[in-house]
Length: 187
Image 1: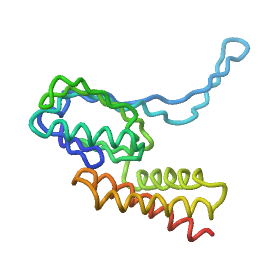
Image 2: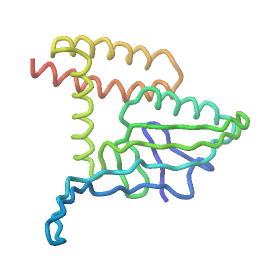
Image 3: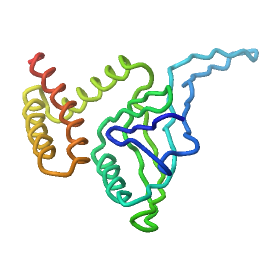
């Protein structure tokens, strides 16, 4: 399968699933014509969530589960890669069965924002960050001020926690700084 990486998490050992569910469908609009004919319009790709399960095991299982819980709660876009596949995703669901701190079965579902090559993923990430920035305020000035606050908070998170928290905060900080630079150029 190759390395499985979600944001700052590199899955290993029992964490790596036997299989990953992914794919999608083409959104279609179908018009039935008189006489039995049909006109079908393709409306675009609709990626299914990427889903898998595994087991976190060993002395750091609980801390790795906590990291994924923080990523799910944050709702930030993450890069998901394995084999030759690359997706920009938001962690939609992360469910854990707390058997004991050293053996924690999990199920994960990631909502696909974009798939494909690096350029496509960067453009999708840029659109995602800009939408978030503009949603923070009624206008560009308000969005810029709100982003400045979030940039400060992400900077503090990088310096005040464990390594996993710092890595997750660095990814968020990069997205926020990009959005802030764009808003600065527009206004």
